[in-house]
Length: 91
Image (tube, rainbow, N blue to C red; front, side, top):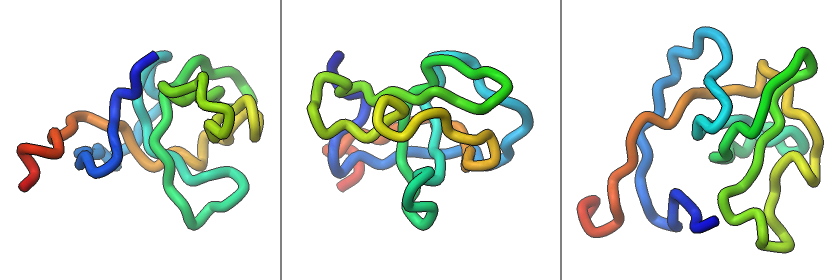
């Protein structure tokens, strides 16, 4: 799958988190192994233990997603990506 976001693009994030986003939503979460870093991923599914996140570039061998670090606790959710600005528009 082609990545939804490319390096240098700007996203608008709704940090008013109330409940879990739907499957397929693009979210910002604190990295489960490096909580000072925020990452943008797509929710593949949720269950009682948290969120299973996938990279849009999942074929990339170094993709950091739930295949590497497992379910992400809900309290790591920072917000929902609501829009993006293309690199050309941001300048």
